[in-house]
Image (cartoon, rainbow, N blue to C red; front, side, top):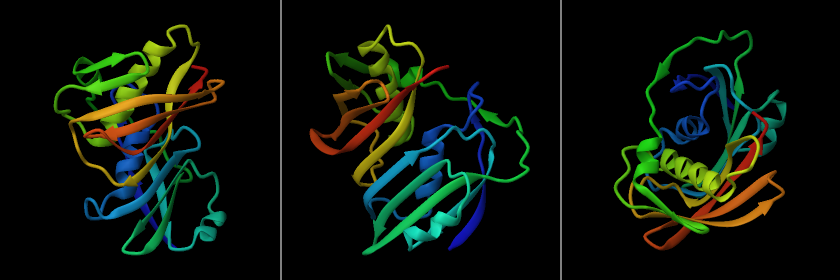
Length: 200
């Protein structure tokens, strides 16, 4: 099992590391379009920007990692890769930030009932775009929901890096503990995205 240090910055005014940044770090270094059966999930807020990233070809190796906050797995050239992220012990909460205006994505998206469509090319990465779209869509679908909508999981047939022609279709609400939406690109389903409602 390999282990390496990773350092994040906070998005905007957030006090935690955004799931989209964790996702992008976990698939970094692999060729675009080369990952299959990709699954990424968040298991708790990552508060520290200093983290340890573990990677193995054997899923059971990760059982020895304590307090896992995010997991990712995918197939690359016929081999499964398993990754886990944990906050580094005794890490400080450094306050390094970068600007992120997700309203730019909201402004070029339109929702109609249980669907939301990206109408122009996004200035952000694929994962940032679908997460912002889905968050906005949930706020429109459930305006009286009490709490904060957070990105919990995404399953993709393959890694995706497009920035346009993205379309989400809301599918299930499991008592707000977990919701599921289809992710489509150019009209073809490429995966599912999951959100949860947490008390803010």
